[in-house]
Image (cartoon, rainbow over all chains, first blue to last red; front, side):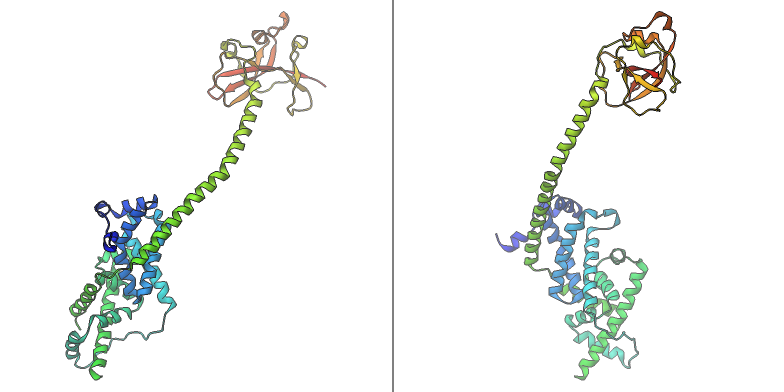
Length: 197
Length: 189
């Protein structure tokens, strides 16, 4: 059996809800655990990756999230949110802990009016690569970063993001708005710097 | 830079990373931990069973011992019809009174702690139900009865004392039926 085939959940497991897989997992069914992991590790990993910008950290966090699910999965209450929201929430806690550990004081982003900004923006649109956007996202303050990652990169609704971030929907919206402004500023700066190099 | 531009750039990043996943080693490690945790839980269950089984056996032996020791008090000795106990009127303990002491052969001194004066002497319990249904728990009620009740359980009473009042303890089961009776006499030291 190839690695890809081994990793592919079977049809029954694909049809089962997260909650059923979780219940089976808590009963000691290893295949249910594996199916749940395969279904949800991608979003968890990508969230951690975008939050930390480190493959190693993202893998560690992914592992820690599913270990935490093993230990505390019995406390999951579907009336309080989806299982994916719970996983994002655990990942978020681990990611923020790592960010705090490696925190480097970064000057607060200041929005400035720069001359000829539209010209520069066009240039940014042409020059910027995905990698530069990634760097800009990672350099956002965590409170904006997590909102941007969840809503724009993981496509969660505002309500789902609010559940993960444990804040009102209005707060998510305002963080996203502020995050976009900071992102724009960072990308412009980068473009200006690149233009002079 | 417009909001739309920012969203477009973020969308491009999301698409670029859409297939990013943790490496297969993570799943392998998680499976190992899952199995080890499962074994640990199973072992914990066995350990708990090994600990509790002897304790449960000891508790059962103690209960059995208590049950066997209590059994003589409720076991039928000299069965009498259950209507014997239909009449008792429930009252609190009353002061000592003259009874027919010489005729009661099975009197014995009560071992229970009682007020020193006068001393209480009780008979064995006489069953009031035949056959007696299973008995688990009940209450002892102190009642006052005519001495003729003693005759009904086979105790001799002089004719002139048949209308005298005597004290008795009635053992009542939890279902409310009188199971057994014993008679009480007070004797001054």
